[in-house]
Image (cartoon, rainbow, N blue to C red; front, side, top):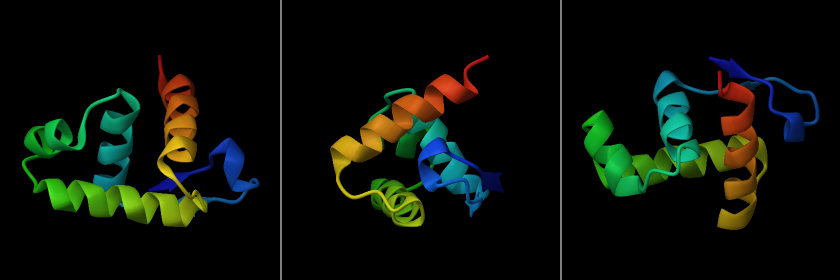
Length: 78
């Protein structure tokens, strides 16, 4: 799946379906444990997906990730 976030410098970034699910739930301000329960995966797997997304986006730190998630949530809210 592709996502073209505004902070990615206009480049397309490929995410797995599971990474997209994790991003969407995280953008809704769910905790890792809640995301894990919702997706029926381990909490460590959620953390790994989030780390992979941060790496793909070139984001360092939780605050920067939270800012991205707020933008992501706003862009995907319908």
